[in-house]
Image (cartoon, rainbow, N blue to C red; front, top):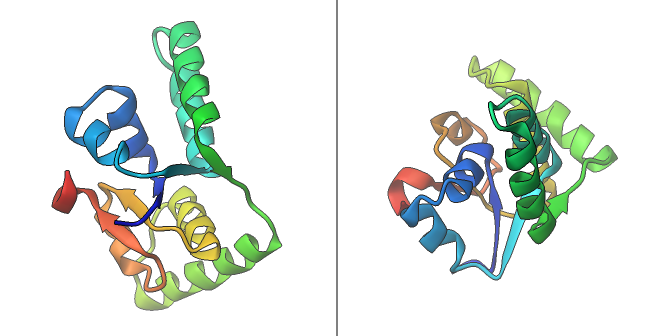
Length: 133
């Protein structure tokens, strides 16, 4: 098993909601990473929720236990390459997901997600949640 894993937002939310399969899977890894874009999506979700104060603290505490993967010029270059490849294939995906994938590609860390559209990114090491959770 890989020692390090990056979480997509939907998997992080499953974990935060205590879904047993996600909790069990994530607990098997030595290091859990969150692309900075995932952090932004989580924090937005907490702030936009009906219980913002409680959720914001819960989400921030979780983020603090993870290794946050930042953006830089290498990530920006990979984003441009990945976005162009998706455009050429006629397979556009949400912008934030291109950033998430690019961060994982540059850092050589597998991503776990429920989103099937990540399968269209050739260089991404993708763990399909439906196959392991």
